[in-house]
Amino acid sequence: MAERIQLHDLHFKPYLSEAQIQARIRELGQEIAADYQDKKPLFIGILNGAFMFTADLARACHFDADFAFVRLKSYEGTSSSGEVITMIGLKAPVEGRYLILVEDIIDTGRTLHTFLPQLQAQNPASVRIAALLSKPEARVKPLEADYTGFEIPNKFVVGYGLDYNELGRNLPAIYQLED
Image (cartoon, rainbow, N blue to C red; front, side, top):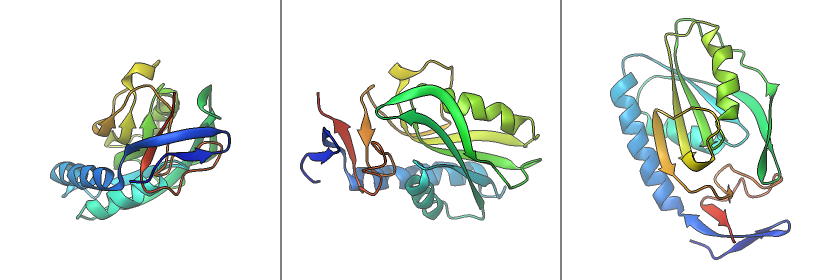
């Protein structure tokens, strides 16, 4: 894994390597396959952060599935704004479908807490959440993923889709803000 990096004015240290991330995604793919291989679920990737995780999770799930994306925004800088804005809405019909929301990180839980009722109102067969990262210490809404890659401390991270003011998304590993 690379050494520490700088994005804008902040310095980050290596936290999760590309190999660790990919190994865990393969495991998640097996877990999801065991639950959904005969159901053809609709994976809904939450942009921008979950684009890499969604793509890699899709490759790790060896069964028929559909994919769609929404863009929800709640972060500004290194913290949640407390407000969730839908930038691009869901176009695919979800009634009667098995949905798997793919999220890069669940920290406060506000984003999904706001989005889930919108999905439930459309009468899907089920809704489950796959999150690469979870920060239980940061949670302000009661929300847990059904499939979690890694539980991490309440520290700001970048890489593998996660950004700091739009930088760092393309890094193959995850880096943590230095103290």
